[in-house]
Amino acid sequence: MAKKSWIERDKKKRETVKKYAAIRAELKAKRDYAGLSKLPRNASPVRVVNRCQISGRRHAFLRKFSCSRLVFRAAALNGLIPGVTKASW
Image (cartoon, rainbow, N blue to C red; front, side, top):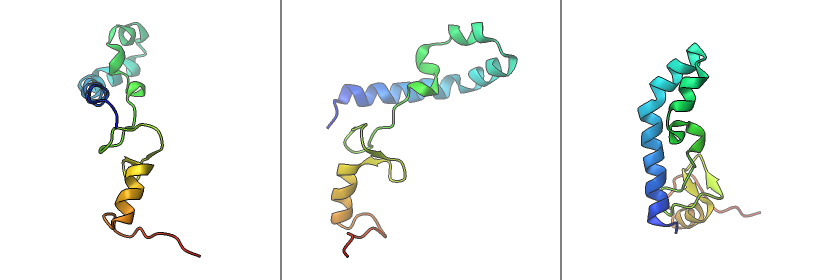
């Protein structure tokens, strides 16, 4: 489980990206790179990290299910994810 502070930091970055999205798009259309550099660093969407919604883990993140492989496996084995079955051959 990731630290609460890391999860909260990521939420804060996502809010900042939403807040400055329109301004960034406008500055990019004008090609005003000096104005872009004056915006906060966390306004860039590149700085947002995909994290598991349950555990906060960022490695082995599955986009389709928006969780880590460990949480996915536990949920699949418990039958919480519809249409996912354990492979057998």
